[in-house]
Image 1 (cartoon, helix red, strand yellow):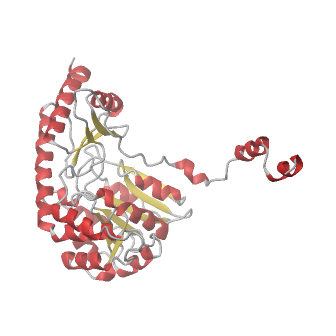
Image 2 (cartoon, rainbow, N blue to C red):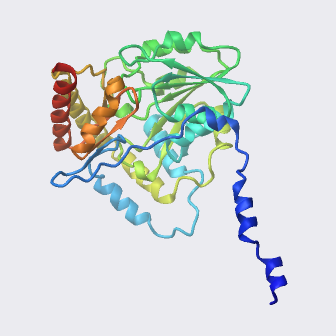
Image 3 (cartoon, rainbow, N blue to C red):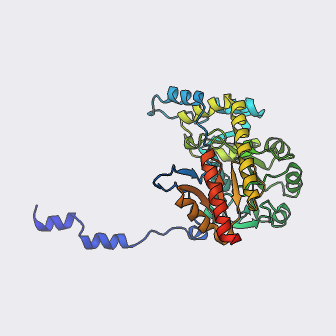
Length: 380
């Protein structure tokens, strides 16, 4: 090959760098919300066992039967899974007392949030959700260009449902509720949700995110299943990630009236939930009572931990999930740093810190950190 042929077939370094200098045109909506940032891993500190309390994971070991089911179904990854997740949906149908046409299984509840936004919202619509709450709410609604109304929580970390109802306009297409609320912890009560839903126009879809419902123990707490039966514009979101301890397998589900499920089926990823994940979730479903018992044990540990923090003088909101919330404001960074120095990862969300329930040793270390931090920053 002569020099002229080579120069014709291979781009010069100048032309390549010139081509790379131009950036592709991305949607302007991307500039209106931050990316989702997962919880940090703990820092390795010599002499200290690291603890990750930043992602609300279930710290208990998996159920042995679930592990056995995973091994049995880890056979041939060359084949697609059942796109309809029929066996798992049948198990959910039997357990929850709803029809197959009222159920959809997806790759975690996060995919449901994306799909629900896609089937309800665009640049002409408005979305309403509490804030602070799950960080994917602004991400999913912002990505489609919907106008977002982030309704501030009350001083005790609860939904301000009156303010959310007042925020509804003719352009409102999607509303999200979170119970227990992530990251603050309080649970919605049944009577207040019904009063709110009675104010919502029937054409506006409302999602009730119950990712942590198994841990909730407060009297009068909202029951998403009974609510969805009574309100055709309500969709219930649940997950196997938290109480079932299957976060790494990505299995979520929604319960809604058939027209909503039909819409979701057009928006979710085909073959998203693997055969392995479906088998593990179905096996866990068969051990429903054991899952709820484990969730209750975590709830008891949570209550003890929250009470100990309150005894130190911290203002801890009602804790009804597998975490507690410290509303630290501008001291959030300093508290996170204090935890990092002791090989503990917590979730710093800017105006507060969320601490997942973990092993007894992990929580004992956090209590020591919190007591020392309170003395140094509030009581000196």
